[in-house]
Length: 143
Picture 1 (spheres, rainbow, N blue to C red):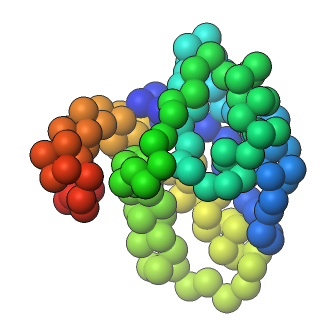
Picture 2: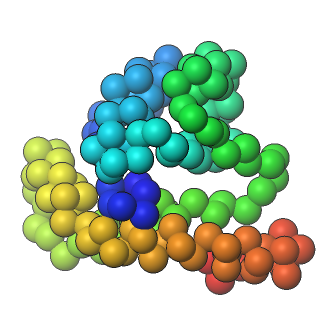
């Protein structure tokens, strides 16, 4: 996601390792940045999940992303994407889901219906999030 909206959605049926994550990056990062019109100057934000910090994924990002935002160890989760997932989860709870195929359909539908203004507000909230973390000395915040 960016302040312009959402990129590609990748549905995953099982746990993935660093190689599976690398495949997702290869298939989606540049294409999503292009779709959102930010290919020349997008910033990749990831948390400290071992898949994200693996040597192979960091090396790929070094050569394929204009900038990667480094996340310090033990940092609070400031990822605005979490708020989008909460929104999607609320929509799914309102649906009558009876199979794996229906949940996939509902996920895709919810993802497509995310308002770009919601993304913009979340991205623009980052300075406030960071100030809150500093104010709370790294302890939990309202975000």
